[in-house]
Image 1 (cartoon, helix red, strand yellow):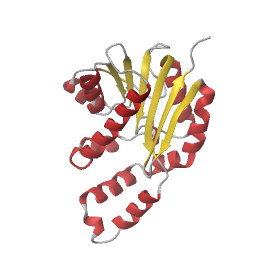
Image 2 (cartoon, rainbow, N blue to C red):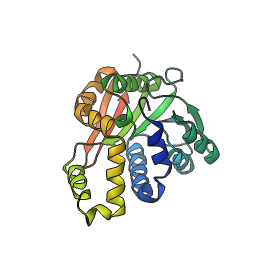
Image 3 (cartoon, rainbow, N blue to C red):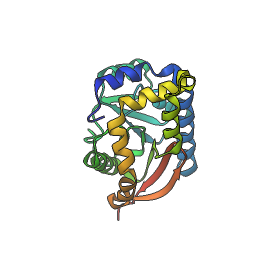
Image 4 (cartoon, rainbow, N blue to C red):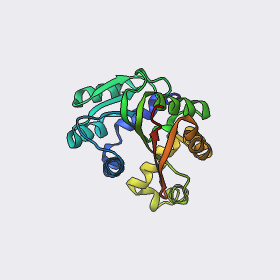
Amino acid sequence: MNGTSSSWYDYYLADDRVSSLRRNAIHSRLITLARAHTQLDGTKTVLDIGCGDGRFLARLSDETGCRTHGIEPEDRLVALCRRRGGFTVTQGVATALPYRAHSFHIIFIDNVLHHLCGMNDYTSCFKEAARTLLPGGMLIICEPARSFARRLARMAASLPLLGNLGVLRHNIEKYEKEKETFDEWIRLSESVIRLIPSLGLETVLLRRTPLKVFGMWRSRPSK
């Protein structure tokens, strides 16, 4: 999103072979979390902020019948979304969503925040999500977590034998490409999460794994 170089997207477009299974697993978990707390069907309008190549939205549309929308800043990924079809995609950024207030029942933010540039961007992103959620709507996020496992993987990648393993090497190269914004997110993520309830969003779930943090917030109903 904001502050992301085009070189990252070159890398993203070549990412399928290594990370497809991992991404599918995350998408499954996001759908499962959403279904546990709200109904997913053709009556729901859903936004994916930073929708990438649209794979998640296409799956969500096929499996649930939701009316799905995505926003993505990168030209080539927007073009991929439009070729994929099955949902509406708009070119734009997370910090200034081009939608009216109270437009969506559910908003997903999946591995986007660690591409933004600091607290102002994080705050703007969540303010925009809160603004465009319908009263009672759900915000669901999945982002990297501070983790011993990540540090261990980075150290292991420098060893001649382990460093040649494709998935491990891929993760290290990916980290190096996004190191500055990734480290900024890790440093500030807990402060950001504590900020979210002040934006009119009630915490429904906050779950951390060694590699990811999953969060869910509900927009407070209008009085």
